[in-house]
Image (cartoon, rainbow over all chains, first blue to last red):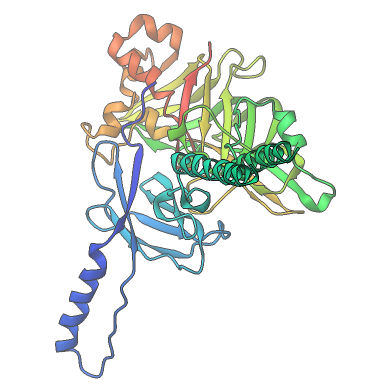
Length: 159
Length: 291
């Protein structure tokens, strides 16, 4: 089976740089602006990278972001930049699966971003109690041995 | 006697401890077999009243190119009288987590709704925007975010023996060619969520929703608003090979015939087109030839 070379490839990653970039932009504007109030907030943005399978970026492609539970109405729309990148900051009050659709000239793709309780980038939730299986087994063995020791201790006092 | 009690206590504590920590272990992931029988899956969905259901429409679309015509990559101006496509084994799925074609053919789903039967539709008709293939009443409400189907050979009707049949006219530099191109191969497709200017497949209780099988004619014939060496046109069959076979202003061809008269590279391009011809909206599908 051959995949069509115009198949869309979407990738995402948490963008640390954009927050700092925003700060620089706002600070520069502060010098030139008159009667304008500017502020910034640091936040973790999601970076979408859209390109064709040929590697060609999907420049100025239509982007629609759908919040969890609202698949019919876009939460945000916009255009990707020349390199096929698009950034957005999901509402932290809306945890769940965010969907991002990128389309251009009859070709498009959809990518999903897990945000909130289960962690960004689809990270799986931590194990129960935050322990790994090996840690739990070690704890089980230690506590069991403790129980045995305690019982033996009282057993010896009876003699 | 006291020793026995203590040994009993010891054993009890040991068992208690093991049970306690065993309870802390993660519940093993539920193994979901994508090949689970459809009826078995549907039975798990409680649909007690009509308020939990809606009407799911299976539709097909050849987009504007099918209805209004198009320019091939060699600038043949093509118009279509008919584009017969025969569809079978159409199944819409509700999947959570949502299915993605990167997962391959093993689709895990919670609800599957099938449109039984085989249907032939004409994508070239002006009102085929899109054309309704069939509908399933009382389908469980929810988000149908995956779709599979087979483009199958017609058993009867105007395109009998073909899974797809193009009938139309192409014109270039004063030359007019009536063409008829038949595709015999059968292909199975599996796609994810609809990608387009609107979302589809979201079925609200008491309402209706569409799931769409979309066919991109530019993948087959190319497009002249891009260079011939554009990757899209390199992958497209075009109309040029058919034009060269035309005799007295007409050409009739199918895969069996073309395999004998085309060079293998050109023929392989045509066959390969069938693997990326169908979409769900603009979303890519997996494709596999049906033996």
